Image (tube, rainbow, N blue to C red; front, side):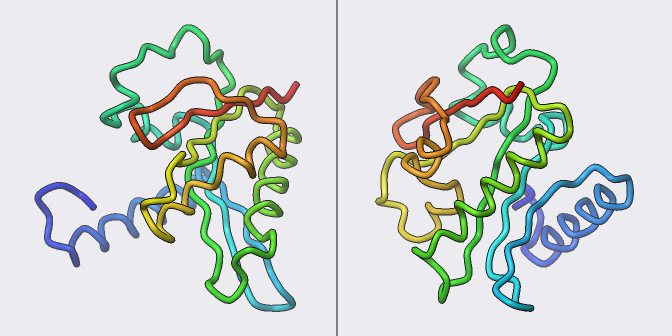
Length: 155
């Protein structure tokens, strides 16, 4: 939520910013369907689309600029409908995002899963370490006590 704003105003501002990104073709996402029902999604994009990560409390303590390269992609958020959890929906979204990134020239892809399950179901918004490992991601650096920066290079 935007600092200093009431919840309703912050939500409205977030929606406006997202619409602006979509309007300018600067928003990337994968939707997963079961028939005609959307059951999951993954937000991803180049680093310039998702800059908030750089100012995160744990990330800002690290200097990762030298080992990132010009083509840096981020996988920042997963969501799976409650009735479809534990059925591989997030993994399908992850694979589709990686395919899309590959078709757009590849590069370094970063994911930020939680290493702890203490956060409850919201913690799955970041994906799991095991899911990223199954797709060939490797642990790169810990981001505080609960997050892990994982990477994969798509050539």
